Length: 144
View: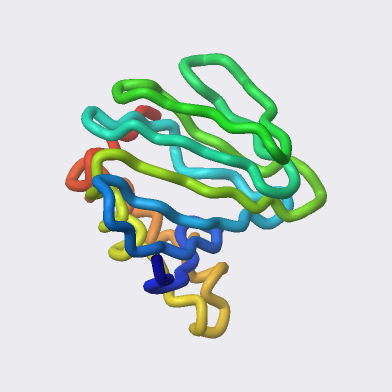
């Protein structure tokens, strides 16, 4: 499997990979003190996170869970969730969505990593507004 692209998406550095199976796979880095997307659910997608380095705080159906390096979390469809890095070190993680299809969100909303100030650009009010208005098109049902 080869890498296709690296983009900054809502403050997270995300590299999408081509896969031969019916799933999307990304490797991501979340800088210290960066929050995740708004609380949301997916009607069709199962989602898994594997923390490679650091730790991430997850909010899943009202419960807060701290997931550390070497640990994983699975999120079934229709499960309200979000996540963030509330530590002082970068968190590296693998993210898988099944079936294939959610990668389009990252491809559409992401800012190419080679752009100057890409991380900052990925969280501008214009991008946030675009995410809020179009997330449902990607089966990301935002609940705020």
